[in-house]
Image (cartoon, rainbow, N blue to C red; front, side, top):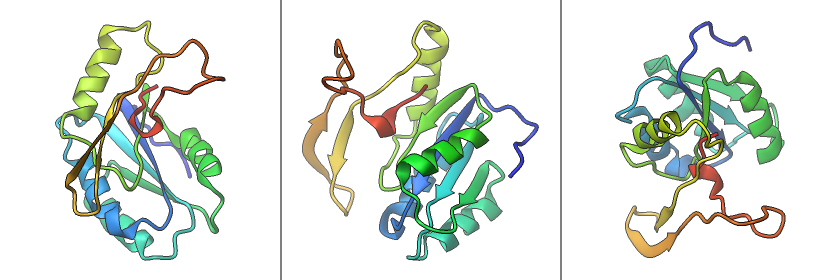
Length: 161
């Protein structure tokens, strides 16, 4: 797949594997962001649950959506690396296919990155929700640690790099 000529401010990178129950809401939560200067690179890791049909429909409706499909399930690391090679944005924004991004996530994170060019990796906190979208009361906060080798305080699907 060739990279597009347009250079968006951000590339949202999302791996997908058999998350049909949550996929539409996850994708919609990115496509309805208040910040719009991004491409949405989605790597379908060989899903066999109908996820590919949902993704194809989104790609037809929104030019920011680019689908890359693995012929078979290769795992999240392979899929993220494959998608990363296709990203064109100044910033890489991670998203998971069973998560929901708040409407101002991208604008707040990109604004912070632009205001503080010394920051190379930005993480955020998460609020857990159940399958019906209700908050469970569990909040996990991103934490700065002395060594990522001992404890990783970064919540990966909230990251902007």
